[in-house]
Image (cartoon, rainbow, N blue to C red):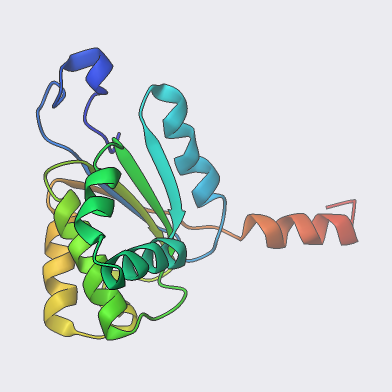
Length: 166
């Protein structure tokens, strides 16, 4: 499990007292968001955000000088699931506020990420090698890294519609 125990079950910081991170590397988009969404049913406060949506929220809050308040608001959640990190690269200011977000969550609360990119390719998304290395250092520390392989669920479903015998 990628999370500390829910506060309702084990005190404010959970049994271990350490939030956990989870990085799901899925080269093909095969139900990673649906799989990770199920965590909310276990009594956790979960927020789901596509990476682009999260980045936009953070960037707007930064421009409006309310980033600290938004980060504090995000701390209410046991888990924030950031979906589709890696599909689009971020401009430098956006990458920097995303770094602030992940740094703020580090050792405070859990984050789960889904990505189609291997870690070695993340510099393409964040644009800066040093920041990407620091980000990965925080994300993989006390983390569960799941590498999923297989055919795309949507692609497989599309083929079945075209050929019902398969």
